[in-house]
Amino acid sequence: MKLIQILGTGCPKCRKLEENTKLAAKQMALECEVLKVTDINAIMHMGVMMTPALAIDGKVKVTGKVPSVDELKIILAED
Image 1 (cartoon, rainbow, N blue to C red):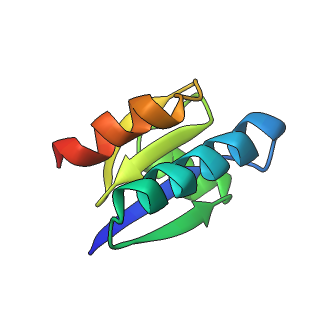
Image 2 (image 1 turned 90 degrees about the vertical axis):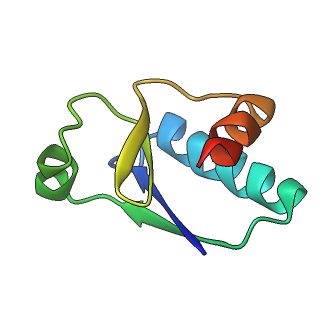
Image 3 (image 1 turned 120 degrees about the horizontal axis):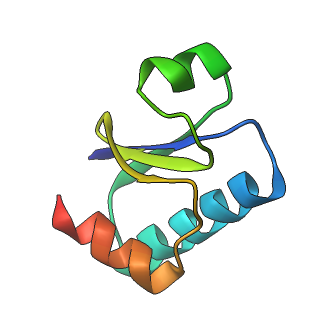
């Protein structure tokens, strides 16, 4: 099971990234856990300086943008 982390402080773009990620995972029937990380220190510790960001199993894959559902499917399928 994949651990997907949505890194951000809760801004509209962060919420959209979470929504798109959950939809992409559902459409792929992907076994995963989606966690929101809102603690700025934890986000910075992962090397992220621009939110929203997406990490899969602790590896940052996207920063500073909100990929489409189709783009997220490609990202989720890579790992």
